[in-house]
Amino acid sequence: TDIKLHFRDGRTSCCLQASSSAEARTWCRTIRHTVAERLRDAFPIGWDVQAMLSPPNKGDLAPRLVNKEPLPRATVEVVQQLIDHSFFCKRKTKDRRGPMPLRLLVEQVTRVQNGAAWQEYDKEREHIRNEIGDSLKPLSPE
Image 1: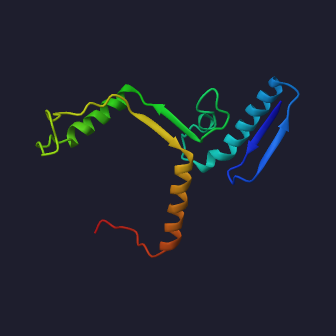
Image 2 (image 1 turned 135 degrees about the horizontal axis):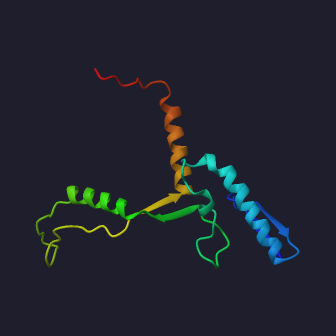
């Protein structure tokens, strides 16, 4: 059984040969665990790196560095309050047909942990930090 690893640069790959499917699964678990340990410091505290490295579907082999986690009902209620306090029923406009909504209903809140988006954000944040340097002065209450 072959295990093919393709790296992000698109040009580098590695092929491991396992003597059985069981050994291949063991190799995959070990590789995922090791990668998760290395990546843990690259992402915010609390992100589930192990879940991000799991394939999104049973048939997929490649992880996408994304984890989607539905949040508890208490969070949905808090977000509903936020929407209730910020949504204004707008008047009918020429392009709208039918009744206007009086309220928006929050049905689910999902935490999305997207590794590629975070790395891009972090890189840009670092670029801005280097560009600004020491030119920013700390804020004072005066």
